[in-house]
Image (cartoon, rainbow, N blue to C red; front, side, top):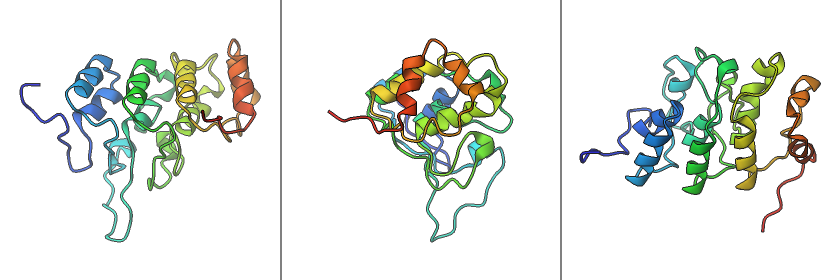
Length: 193
């Protein structure tokens, strides 16, 4: 990296690491982790996702908190075509292996539903919300979707409520992943060891 600070951020907290995650450059993500990028570093503005600059929060308002895992599982710009969305299990695995919390919520973001985010949503909630509407008419979930779901579950993601709101259009796409569907619809937290 030629001596540059891999954690240098712009005024929103957006770093080259976040951009590598967004563009699914697994090789760059791994290189940056190996050179000191903090996988938990938050983006503290919604402007990168909403496509519009927003006024900064007032002195008594909390900053938004969005991390690299939220980006990897489906926060996207309104200009982004979610029906062609791809997921990178390799990047999600790197983030989880390097300590990112699979249950960390994207906080204080308002309601960026056009960006695949419900207020205070976990990565698993973001993942399912980002494909819920556009995937209603698609034949199957995007590549990597089920691998990312399984990784999040394997690392302890809370599955409560994930199956709520899914319709028969969504459920039919679980063909070949029936055991995963059965697990998600149990609506129970994952047992901890």
